[in-house]
Amino acid sequence: MPTFPDAARSALADATQRRNLAHATGIIRTKRAEVVAELDNWEQLRAAAAAIKDRTLRHLDQHLMRFEENATAAGAVVHWARDAEEANRIVIDLVRAAEADEVVKVKSMATQEIELNEALADAGIDAWETDLAELIVQLGDDWPSHILVPAIHRNRSEVREIFRHRMGQVGRPAPDDLTDEPRRLAEAARLHLREKFLRAKVGISGANFAIADTGSLVVVESEGNGRMCLTLPETVISVVGIEKLLPTWADLEVFLQVLPRSSTGERENPYTSVWTGVTPGDGPRNVHIVLLDNNRSTVLADEVGRDALRCIRCSACLNVCPVYERTGGHAYGSVYPGPIGAILTPQLRGTGSAVDASLPFASSLCGACSDVCPVAIPIPELLVHLRTRVVDEHRGGMPTPETGAMKAMAWMFGSHRRLEAAQRAATVGNRLLGRRASIGALPGPLAGWSSARDIPVPPAESFRQWWKRERSEKADEPGAAQ
Image 1 (cartoon, rainbow, N blue to C red):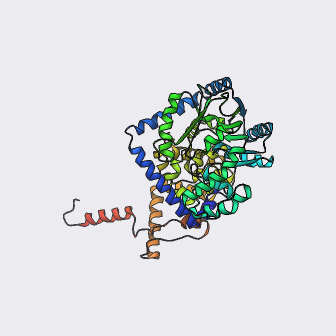
Image 2: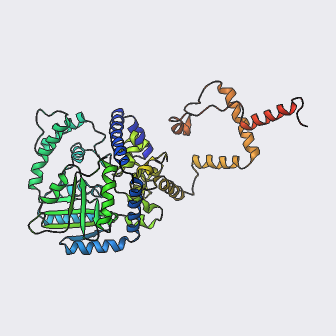
Image 3: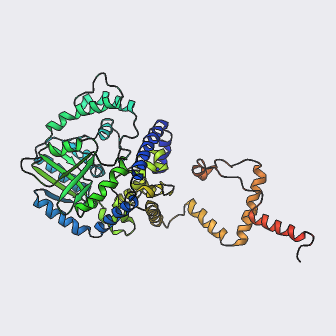
């Protein structure tokens, strides 16, 4: 993947994608604002959600052990995975033990994070995404660009063409008379997926929440496909990030109020599935839970960065972000795009690569993301924290042009005489450039910065020059105090 600035430059050239993103995020923002305004205690709910998450993270080890104990007592098997490789190996072994060569999947950010689908494919196992948007992405050989709506960058006509050309290659084909009407597209997806639901022996999911008191897992979704994956197969495997823990059912009550309003702009989630271990005669006969670390412990150790682990994957920050709305999710080079991705990905993957080191700078720091976050993550503060880390990691060696420029600025501002001299020199530019409003794009290394910004022409005189001139003229007036 290219760095964010390079990827964003390519994305900005795609007018169709920008139009799709602006339309979709605008609708979601409006719906969210309406349902949030209905609650007089919205800010109290946000504060409660943040406090619950912080309290849980402070004692995460205890809650994890209690969750394992209660889940095991209910008939589930709990596995611990230190990283993506170990998690993928556990899942592949479980699928093979079930003598299956295909699985149906509930939309899951954790499985995308560890690239489970690719690992299953390498092992000769087909993984079928059943969420409508994830199905569009998979059939289109694409990559998710949004946490909630992975195919947000696609319009209806593009989805129709994907269905017409790809469905028949992996299962039931799309109808010959398929149109781009949303109802017809959903019907085609339902018919295509139904046969996969009915024959699959293994279902794979993530979890929105895990309840320590009972060992239960919770999945919230809007289409009902998740419930099919969790109830029809004989074996269910859930890959769950360790930060998804909640201590009690009372804690879940708060999150089931803030999550749907922040994500889909709904008062209540259409499908909320809860399962606890194995129930004889009902549902799957084998339940496996893979508790995933994958550097979350490292994030937890950072007293500032750990706030990112509050995230409940609602995507509200993406829908208000002016940067995301114009570049889309692919520019972030991660399954976690937008503001939350800019703080979560560099912590999970490190800032060793140029791609990850560029992500904390993929923001204007306007603060809109923090204002809408249902768990009150101070995203701008974390972005600055990570920017500091990136700069500190690259100290030493040959200075960059930016470093040289900043040192020169510090030297100039260190003396009022040097500052006055620089201001006098700047006014010369006014005489050279005349009445132009701005300088325009600069040549050389500054071209990348100035191509997207207007640089005003320097004024004819600085404030200091004006103030001295005014004082001198008043002193020369008749009757002026001597």
